[in-house]
Image (cartoon, rainbow, N blue to C red; front, top):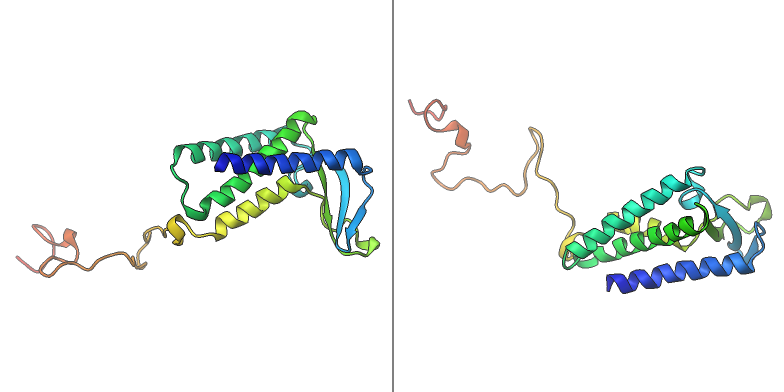
Length: 191
């Protein structure tokens, strides 16, 4: 299911980019809804035009992210519960933009622009594409969704003095509260 989902999402990203690049005039906003415009631009930066000027670093980062998620998805069986969806989105978005960077000289096609209908405020939000959306939504879901089997992610044990370990069981009757405090040299009150 992971591979089929990734195929569908990457195909949707690539098809929409091809349509934008072949049908929209470059840099001219085309209103669709009062808050949505289609504006075809080429972007050498990351999602939402961040880090412009480092296209091959971004391509390498996308390749690493996609490889790590692919490795994780193929080595763990099965992916735990709802955690497959954020990873699927991040993987598909990374692959979609990586395909662009490898085939368009380090750049990606962007075409979605949201913002107020007032033309004076146009450009207040960067132009982006479906792959950018997949990465951002996947990252947010990865943080917000519960871990395995619908339970929240495990909390690490306490690391410092004064922190209480909610998983700590009290000692059985007759056992010392602190094993280091019993036996020879300990201060268990025996002499």
